[in-house]
Length: 150
Image 1 (cartoon, rainbow, N blue to C red):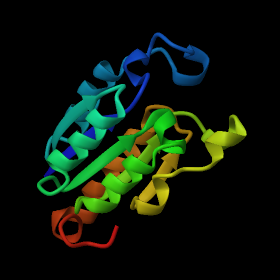
Image 2 (cartoon, one colour; image 1 turned 180 degrees about the vertical axis):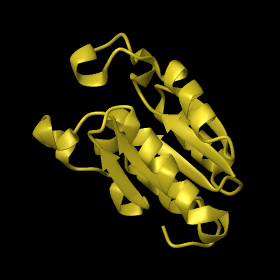
Image 3 (spheres, helix red, strand yellow; image 1 turned 180 degrees about the horizontal axis):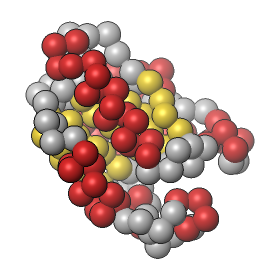
């Protein structure tokens, strides 16, 4: 089962930036843990700080992968283009956030992506990604992906 973990702007700085909010572990290190924890999944990881590149990646995998775990970073709250890209693809998308966005600035309380995602997981640190993968693992490939309701 092919699953993409897609990270947006500034998430390349995990482990370095705002450690009190985002922790001290890099995503690359955590991704290795996820690959070990989910050996039956074909996990891939991609990060970009550029909105158009994220859209291109959603288009690239959105008709061939069984699911996408997406942390859009700040684009979550501003990007109509990313929400349109999620709406256009067949693979179900789970929106994740490391911090509890509802405990932060008021502008972060609105997601442009959530209406087109299967669900949203927020506030559990890096474990938010594991929770999303557990959903895909439990739902089994035949029940998710192509032609399913997001």
